[in-house]
Picture 1 (cartoon, rainbow, N blue to C red):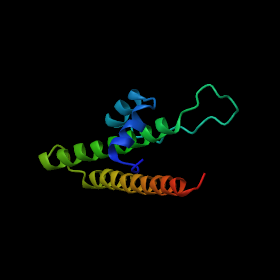
Picture 2: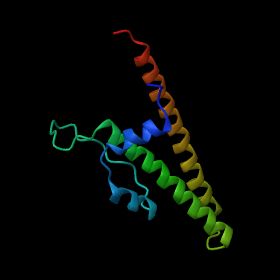
Picture 3: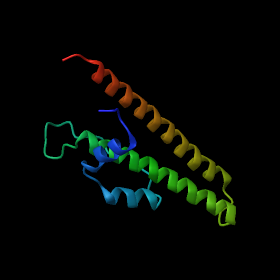
Picture 4: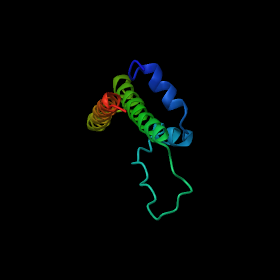
Length: 118
């Protein structure tokens, strides 16, 4: 392997399951936190790592889209609430920064695994 590339990451994400309804809800303005996993021992709804990662990427994307919509509304005069626009933009910025840090940790872990001798 040459390392983790964009095409490899896309292939990894394609193997996971998606929750398309969650994306629609987030884009429409219902930006609630993801549900906590069930720790009661019931294993009927376990999600793979790829599905969890894809959901996180979709959540960050939805926050970015919501921020873009709010900025467009402010620019066109549909809204005058600058504080709401700034809060939405900062929420999207923090989520993106967090996702970049998670990506860096995943890449570091991958590189460490590749250095291990069998």
